[in-house]
Amino acid sequence: MTYKRELAQDTELYVTNRLRSLGYTVEKQEHNSRCDLIVNGCLRIEVKGSLPNANNGRTRYECLYHNDADCIVWICRNDTRHTFVIPCYSWNTTKNLAVWQFHPDMYQGKWSVFYDSWNIISDLLSDMSFRYVQSKMNI
Image 1 (tube, helix red, strand yellow):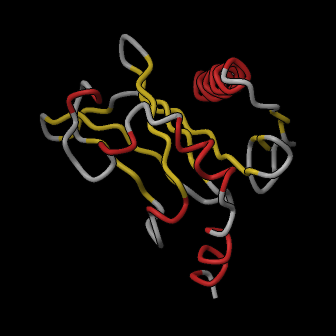
Image 2: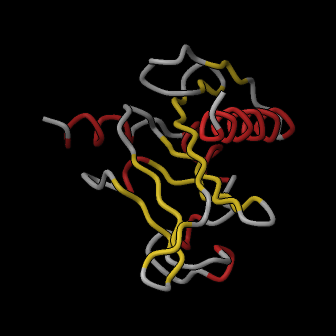
C-alpha cells in the first residue's frame, strides 16, 4: 500500500469518526463513487487529505476536487490535523484548492472562514436547497 493511499484511508477514518462523534450517521461509499461519505442518508461528502509541500521556499497544502459532492472535508496535516469544511456553493468551478501556510490555523486566505467549521454540516442538512444551485451551475 502506498503512503498516499494510507493518508487517504487515515483521513477518511478520522472524518467518519468525527462526524459520528457529532451524532451523524455516516455511510462509506465504494472507491469510485461520486463521493466518499453519505451523512444522514443524504449529504454527499468528499474527503481530502494533504501534507505540506514546499514550492519555491513557500509551503502549501493542495487538494484537487473532481467528484459530485455537496461538501468537502479537507484535512491538512503537519504535526496535527487541520480541518476545512467547505460547502459546494463556495468553490463554483474551482477544481484546485490551496492553502499557502505551513500552519493552516494561521491561514488568512479565501478558505480560512471554513477552518474547523463542522457546523456547516448541520447547516447543509437543514437546508438542502443549495443542490439546485449546484446542479444549475453544472449546466
